[in-house]
Amino acid sequence: MIGLLLAETAATYWRMAKHGSAKRGVLIETRRSQKPTVDEEQRYKGTVLHPLFGYIFDPKRQGVNNFGFKTEYDISLSDQGYVIQDQIERDLLVVGIFGGSFAYLTGELSDDLEQKLAKIFPESTPIVLNMAIVGQAVPQSVFVYLYFRELFDIVVYIDGLNELWNYSENNRAGVPPEYAKAAHYRYKISRQELTPRTFENTARLLATQRKMDEVTALSLHPVLRNFIVVHYAWNWRVNLLSRKIAETSLAIKNEYSEGDQFFKMSEDEILEFAVQQWRAYHDLVHRVAAQQGALSIHLLQPNPFVPHSKQMTPEEQSLVTQSYPIEPYVVHGYPKLRQAIPMLETQGIVADDLTDIYQDVAESIWIDAAHANRRGCQLVIDRLVSKIQHASQMNPLPGNSSP
Image 1 (cartoon, helix red, strand yellow):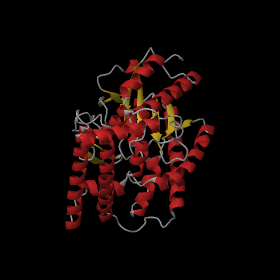
Image 2 (cartoon, one colour; image 1 turned 30 degrees about the vertical axis):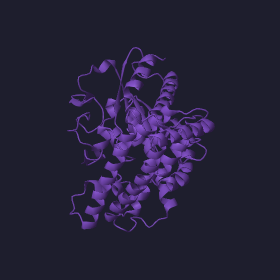
Image 3 (cartoon, helix red, strand yellow; image 1 turned 90 degrees about the vertical axis):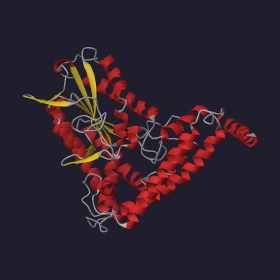
Image 4 (cartoon, one colour; image 1 turned 135 degrees about the horizontal axis):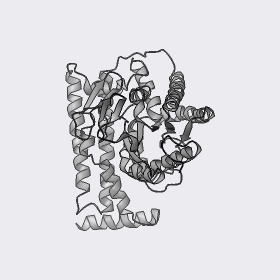
């Protein structure tokens, strides 16, 4: 106990000298963001294959609607097509959030978005459908919109990373680039007979993940969570376990790789193709939405590997470094995506580059190399609301007066 108190005193003085204050709350929140929720633990266990959308949530899971999306609203069929079940259609302003895991986490703040939109559109009842799926990219996310297109008054896409990541990994694994993250999910839901090596690696992966969850839970114990030295001990231990999880996951995934590229093309050529398809699909969504009388918003998601996009805290730096090995995709692919934004705008598309959204934020935002914490998603919601308000002032939505 004396040793712990001495170490805590030293750690406190070090943080105060470096950051101006101990910021214990920030450290606790960093660990809490890594503690798995029930939903996160079931994220892949409840994954099922859809013939058009790729991998969706199991509709039998709690909190998942009848079509496999993480939203409280079920979708019914009427003589007019798809409708929101148990809702009075004439009063609704229906917003759809589309994309991968970053969009999914943003869509989890649907209540916040609904409240902000209610102030802009007082004559309507905004409801937000989280139609984003973890790991999803175009064309699957576009298939989702086209399938339910008559439902939405506002269509929001937040994507970019998976378009680069999926295309490259799929092609390298021997499957068509536009498949639904096949290289990543194949081993998760495959029913092939497990080899002894894969079985051993899977057991090791589960045991390591469980150990990391236990370490995080222990560090958040009421007696320990306020100790700065506990945070640093947790950070050191979790980094080691995260590295082991990443290595084991890669070994398992490689067991299911075909081994040969699908297209014999360079990495840069695949990324060029991915960006070309990203532009084309966003243009398609814009044109279809316009035909439906809907507003579409197209946002390029941020990423910590975009140079000069944020001065990361030591906690962020540690979490990002030990996370997904996606830096090459971002460094080489994001400049191409960012150059595509003004091209979309010249076509009359409401588009925005969010890569600078955290540039002036001093606090921790990134929980890994692809995902932001709640504060980061709230900042995206604020930018989205601003874009919707501005766009609706220029072109009022049907059935709503201009704000």
